[in-house]
Length: 107
Image 1: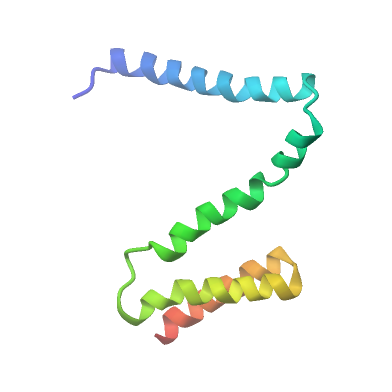
Image 2: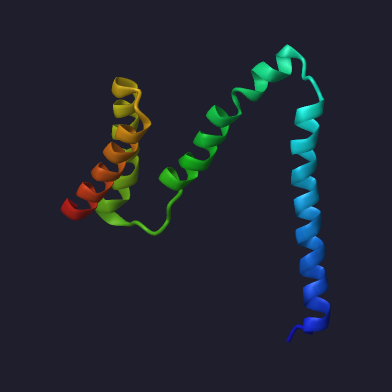
């Protein structure tokens, strides 16, 4: 059992530390001019983070077994094709999710 007299000060200190760390970057970005090379590299962060989030969810999902194990990779492949053809994120999400739901219902 955790003593609440020790628990809440630790939680508040961790929350304050997290807030200050994140807020400091917001303050720095407004006051510092980054070199053009850094700005160009920062533009690629979303494109590199998104696959790092999606790939484990698609390929390493252990809850599925049997024929439904292929539903996630096939839905991801359909989403990639839809994104390539339409270049519309909403249509891509709807295409991938619709394919996943359809494959899970059929398989």
